[in-house]
Each structure stands twice: as structure tokens, then as C-alpha cells.
Image (cartoon, rainbow over all chains, first blue to last red; front, side):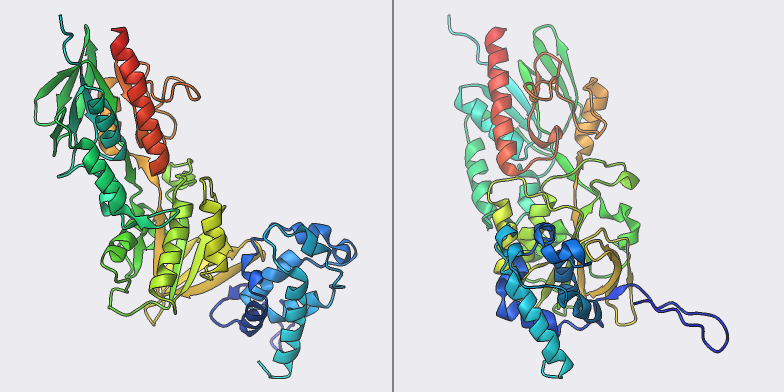
Length: 119
Length: 343
């Protein structure tokens, strides 16, 4: 994310790592929350990530993904959501009863629509 | 021959003191209730509604007022107990104003002080507009008007947890216990009063220790769409639009986060009250590293001071909610009555 490229003067400028809540895009969040209201209930325990098969082999964490949705970190989210295989094991673990599988599906759909300017 | 009526002094007329006085009076014991303020009631007097059910605080105030409306209770206001000592078979208490009160026993119920938010200068309380404490917000709820200093309606409010608690920088390593659930309660109330207003809680841990607290936390997310961000706010500033800008690490994303707020609510914690600390100092009552009164035994003697005839009730020993304060106070009465019987 923070790309470092030397400019014509020979020095590099790092992009800020900070999440700026006031400029980030939360359309996907609204899209997901509206279609899967249980999404609000996630309290980031990480049970889903521990159960996740994809997460054992690829850097995928549904717990982190939920935070990216909430903060509107779309670029990170786009990479993240593609790694889920929709097996639904996370659904069996969630102590708050979040329909995690549908959260992933709606996120993928939301991003597709965002990219097509439909949100 | 009829035995002489026993007399107990209760130092402090908050929830603990009022409950203790009422219980003692009911058992035929004469009580002198010493309160520092204009009226008994303590911090409860400022509160609008109580967690977890959001019932009006007035209901509990009413119960307590009724509790102390007893012929055996003499209420002395605008007075504090400055020193207490055991003398022969008697307890002698020096009151502010120079008078003295003699009794068979004394219950310390001096309660807590709210943390003075000015001490966390980085949050700008008393420096910036629109930085308020949880107690200030209750005042706003009492007036049914949650507004910014310029009178405008806030569109985003942030609650900052652990202000003055779990913080070595202000010499308070203890957790004040009730602020988490207070924030959840107040967040819900804001959402109900101002449905257009976004609400964020910035927390380190959510400590939902009491019955129905966790359910309230869940309700705040499920029904009222309150947002929770895990991270301690490091500082606040004001931008050109006179909105507050906070810096926090979103510890779940693992990245710093910046956010503008219209109103910032500091969830101030509990500290040992000043009159309580003074009484401990003058009377040789031991205090713990958290500066609250230290009981004779942590597990089975939390109402005993270690001095014969002096007992503890409520938040002078540790932060507590109202339910626990009332239970603790009743236990103090039980210990006191047992002591009076053994004399």
C-alpha cells in the first residue's frame, strides 16, 4: 500500500499508513450492513479466522476483513475477499451468530458494484 | 431493665450511606447520617438513567429517600467526618465545623470522586469546546438536549473509554468497572435522541461484568448501530471547521486512524473521594495502592476496617455499581449489628 518511489529529485515520499475515516469510502459497508444486518454484531474475537481453511494456507483473515469493511479500506478488501472459498466453517464458530458467509458474499458483490459505479 | 438504644454514625450520604442508615434504623438503631452536600443522594443526584435497563435514576433516588425517612435517622448535611477514633467502648467522631459525635459504631460510606478530566490534558477538556465528560452528558440528558457549545446538533459523537482508569500516567492502575457499560448505555441514549448522529466508542477492553451488560452491548450494535473501535485515543485537536480531530490506533486493523468528531465524551473513572482520603489519613485507616480503603480481608472481610467499631460500605473500598454498593452496604450493617451485639 505504502509505495515508495523516488521522484525526479531523488528522494522518496511515503504515503500515510493512517486510516482517514473522513475520506474513506464506506459504501461497501452500507451495502453489506443493509443486506446482512448481523454484520454489525462482530466483536472481532477471531473465531472465524481460527476455523478458516483458506486462512491456514493464504494470508486471509475474516476478522480483519470485517474491520476493513467498517473502515472503508476498499483496496485491501478487494485482495482479501478473493481468498475466501465460501465453505462456511466460520459460520459454525461465530459466537455472535453473524452470517459470516453472507458477509463475504455481499462484500464481493458490493465491491463489484462499486467498481462498476453502481453504488 | 431496657437496654440503651445503640447509636451508629454513617459517614457519607450517598447510595451506600443511605442504604446503611435505612437498614440500621429499621432494626431500631439510632443513626446519625453525615452528608457533605446540600442533600443526601451522592452522585446519583446527577444521573438521568441507569444501566442496564435505562430506568430513570429517579426511581432509585425515590427508594433511597424513602429509606432514610425514618424517625431513628438524624441527617446532618454540609458536614464531613474529619476524624474517628475508638475510645473505651465508644466511637468518637470529629465533624467539620468543630462538633463531636459519640456513638457505638461508625460506618464509612464516603464513596468516590469522579476523575478530574482536566488532568488528561491531551484530550482537551476545559481547553476545546465540545469535549465533555460522561457526567456532563447525563446533565444534557436531564435537559433532553444534546448539543454542541454553539447550539448545533452533533452528527458524530465519540466516547473515550478509560479516562483516568487503567492509566499509570495519572496514577490510577485500577479499572473503574462501570464506565464501559455507562458508555454503552449513553451511546444508545444518544442514538435514540439523535437518530441521525453516528456514535463511536473507543475502548481498550469491553468489560461487561454485570447481569444484562453483555446483552446491552449486543443490543447497542444490533439495534442501535453503535460502532466500536478498539484503541486508546492518544490526543485530540481542533481543525479549522471547529471539529475535533482524534488520533487513535485501530488496533484490530493494526493501523493508525484519524477521525473528526462533533462532540467527544470522556468516560471518567472513579477515584477515592477527598473526604474519604482525609478521614483515612487522620484516623489511621489503611489504604491500598489504588488509594481506596483497604479492608481487613479481601475475600471475607471487605466491610471490616481492622479497627473495632469501624466498618466500610460501598465505593470507599473500590469502584462498584449501584447493585453491588447496596449489597455491600447491607453486609456492612450485618457486621455492625453483630459487633454491637458482642459488646
